[in-house]
Image (cartoon, rainbow, N blue to C red; front, top):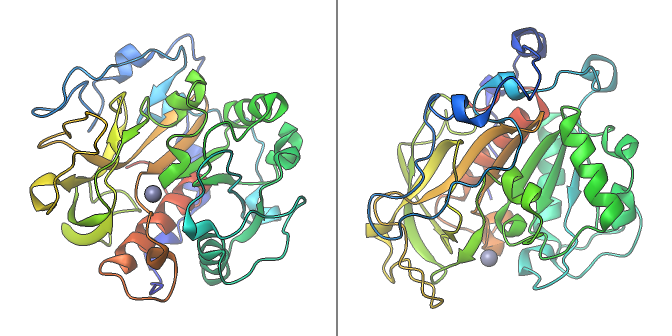
Length: 330
Ligand SMILES: [Zn+2]
């Protein structure tokens, strides 16, 4: 993995904070935000269609009026800090290495590829990184408010207990940042609020792990600004049900470039000409940046993988903007 420094990521947080207008969630509904900017349609224009546009009963979308600027973060004093959460309650990706013992920041080995990569990103870009697979580390909102963003790194299934669910919701409602990577989809499948946090979308199935071409849909965002319009990568290209709604689509995969096609063997026909892989939204007071990409171990290590420098830059921009250090979801 090649790490790139991006000068545009160093943005003034004051400008962002000043631009935020706090309104009641009762005033701004998703219905009136649904037409703002580049938002996902309720269905694709070929392949699978009519994949749902659920109502999560919260303010969400690319409009910053959904953000709660309640003064819970003071980066000028505290700096920036993120928590990487990778507890798996089901299948475990190779990029996570062996399950970690309890506590905060337990010892890592080189096998913990994704955690190591995120820690290295933080060291190179001046934000602190804590990591854990201990659900009790998420059990109170006050613990989470120490972090400018929480990164769900290929968590799976029921990774949170009831106190952690409540805590995550309170954290997001208090203006917290969420970054969901790869198997953060397919996590907490039956918790609707979390599905909304993912963009009103969730994992259905995936095709083969195979090369494909990522198409950048919006280059105004810090997570895509430095990327080529099209770049090659290798991933599983998750198929989604529901289909993301009321979000800003940042990048998609060109299904015509997938040698084995998008079909995953569970009956999903793929999304045709409209297959998002990354998007962002304000959600229930907080910020959420998510990507379905990141399957390959090589994407997180120095082992060569075509396009991994773009993938890492993409993730870095997602973290920076979810933390509120760069403008979010442009
Ligand atoms: Zn995977």
